[in-house]
Amino acid sequence: MALIHEFTTAKQADIQKILENVNLLRDASVVSPVVGIHDDFILYFADSMKWIETTNPRKKPEEHIPHQSLCYYGLTLFLPNQVTQFKRVIEAWYSMFSLAPDEFIITGSWTEVVGEENSGKYDKIKAIKAEILETLSELIQLCVDVEKDDSLCLFHWGI
Image 1: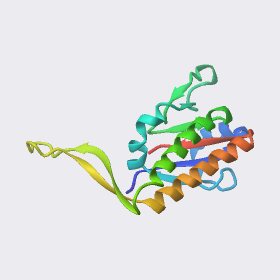
Image 2: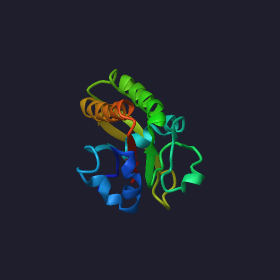
Image 3: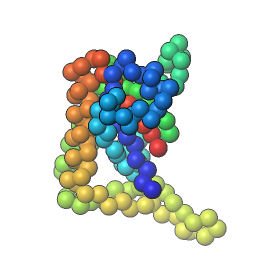
């Protein structure tokens, strides 16, 4: 089963309802279409994600200390005042990948076989330029939607 991080927009008025029933993030009457990004790319983007201020919606409002990066295993909330910085980072990745050949390799996580000496290596992940550009473009559009309508927010649903 692929590890996919999902992004979608929802009305800020629905945040509490979504937190009470996270499956609403898959309900088309509550959220926009979902954009999925494979975990390999989220990990590849990880350092630049640390530059982004987000909100952990599982914290009580009085505990809403700004969070940096994505909540990897849970929900991350981007309020309208937080989404522009995220969009700019995604646009930068889009720009870099637009320079790539049609098929390319990204370096993934370090893996090794337990008990086998010198078995460690970095995963090599095949990527298709058109696919990642389409996905990033869809994610950028979700950000634009939130920027244009401050009643919306962007949700990230981690693995």
